[in-house]
Image (cartoon, rainbow, N blue to C red):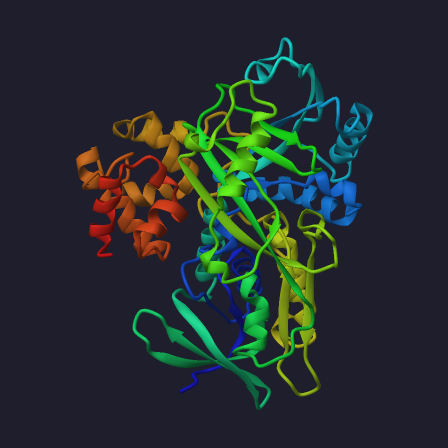
Length: 499
């Protein structure tokens, strides 16, 4: 039986859905978000973990997208400095590929197109003397170093959902939308609780389809609508290997096939290498890195690093499906990363807004654009301006100019944590870390330690505040502690969560 209608029902708990729910709730709308699995369990947790303008998109003349993304870097860094941090990228000049003058021109545009204020500008490196040259083959002598930011992608989704809930939104995870129809000026959407099998009907004045790789199947399935555009599903895979070098900068490597890959310091002890771009067919939930992709990434990185990387070095892989707008590009890596919004409505009918494409860096601007599209349909939106550019995400109320880092502050106030654990908690939870620690005066007060500093207190917090239910939610989305725990320790987490 349908309850009271909300203003907005969002289908999809990835970064776009969570961002729209947060923005709408903050403007006073009543909002419900439904996600068929865990938050960020699809594309949004399998990115390259970057907030970046997309240097290579300049070659495809996507200046609007790059400019918007470049502006967003510093906006997002300011509202979530605990999970977003600046990172310097080293781009070695490869004699046989793009000429040095072209790289420098692109980086000049990159520095100036988005109004960079706090991030450091590009500079030229001599790889024969700079520490960035030590892990590389001797033939690389010149490089350019520029700024972007890194992000904990899955946590960014969760923090948006937490803030949406704090502003009144209902967040329903493990709820699948199985039917949707218009009646009497409203959407009536049947959702099934995947844990119990129970179904309920939710009603809304407007419906947002932010289902990511499932955007088209939601339209043609539950909504029984015609898809207004084609989705191009593109698989992107990454590999993780033991740390390849000692400094804290990342690399961006050009390849002979015109693709680029990144090598990024990851989780202190590892290096993340990615990504691939290839068209994908099949169930997006079943995507996995292929042997060919793993070999490709190893070979591409080995073109630059002095010590070859082989598949046996790989300790973990992950893969996701990007739901790109199909602009007819011949190659997957050339397909646009820009977003397209399509509104299906008619006089007297409740609107349906579908999200095609997009990238994690521009999610906040996408959310604003989505609400602009719905402004004429939702009276509660009229006169309500966007607000998310200056409002900290949960735990992000930290000054970028503070002389004492959040990690150091937490360690000073709770010395029993030790420096490493204090740093991890501060970088994951920011000022919310104290909600995990509570009144604890020792590690014993935090309960069982499952390994790598993961305690019962932290798991309880994740279940209570962040919708975590399974070991994967805890070990691979809310954190990447699965990389640091043994199989026996991961089994103990599973047993503790009742999985």
